[in-house]
Length: 272
Image: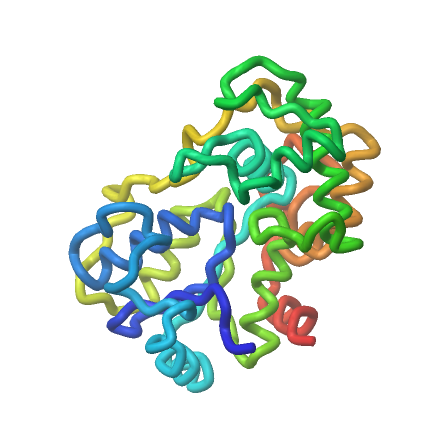
């Protein structure tokens, strides 16, 4: 199976397990900058050179060797399940994507037909009942994850622990896992532990939010989207994310972690 979703600097200073919707665009650009002294011109996910990615055949043996030898500092970044799934809804379901089309072609028409959701019209700009549509989307998310119907789960809303686990199950070890919500602290820890060709000053790094502006703005506080049933579904889908990464299941309005991540526990529970 290898190490899907893994990126590494060409200098092999650091290796990163990408988790969608968890600051991955900013992290990728920091890695690119640390090697080249300049940011990639465009969405870092589109970069075909300047960085090792598991998706590139020529990168796979280099990444595999680095992971097996644990010769590079390895990290990943996680996010609160409540805000992550909401972000997926507004970006991927309600939003128009970079190519000017709807995400995954027929996905949105399927959701409108089968789950009765609204997305704010053809451009995603019209008023609609965000709370009702989001809760219906959450039912769809549960169906994809629990029953793989009407399709397999998408990487943007499948559990963070699932993404994080592939690296461990195939023999990798994380040196650090940090929270999107405490991004500067977490990323600084990574930078403090590696030698890079170009020095990175986090205070000078812009945020590369590639999903920004794709869809309508969230009209309500996070907690308004989650009633008792929605919270039940969230726990069913994301229990391991809440538990392992210490997020507050009881209070959807609290996006901050409520404890420290235990790397030993993560490796033990996700290592199969």
